[in-house]
Length: 157
Image 1 (cartoon, one colour):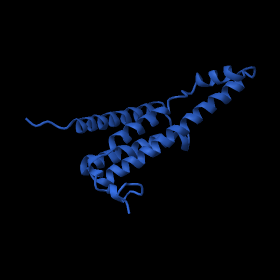
Image 2 (cartoon, rainbow, N blue to C red):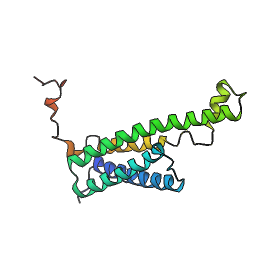
Image 3 (cartoon, rainbow, N blue to C red):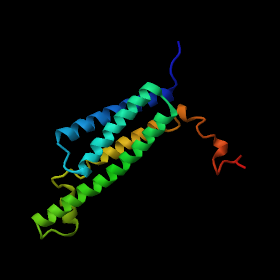
Image 4 (cartoon, rainbow, N blue to C red):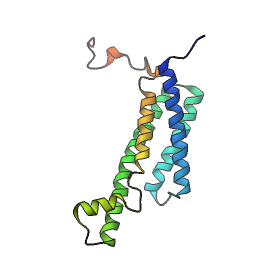
């Protein structure tokens, strides 16, 4: 009876978590009609691209598909970080306008609880981290760059 190595089982689980996370996030954004301008369309576009790259990986399991996934996950991370800032600062402006007497910690607390979910874009960051974990030391990447070619490798020239 042969069984898969634990690392392969974990990699497959991460892939499924990533796939379901992207699909769920995409559906949520569509249901919320998160389509008002370029900034709101960015996560929809990135999720669509990620689904395409995951389909490519499923079909080819190539070095290029793993590297492309890493690139899209980097963009997910950037998008989530920008989204956190936009949600927070949008709520901050709304809180100032709706209650000019707010200041200090009360103002920031109100911005965190605002009508735009401040931490929701963190989902993009979480998806990026799952994608990075999936690609970490991926078997397809072995040999893509030899360790002795790395600049600080102990056997480097």
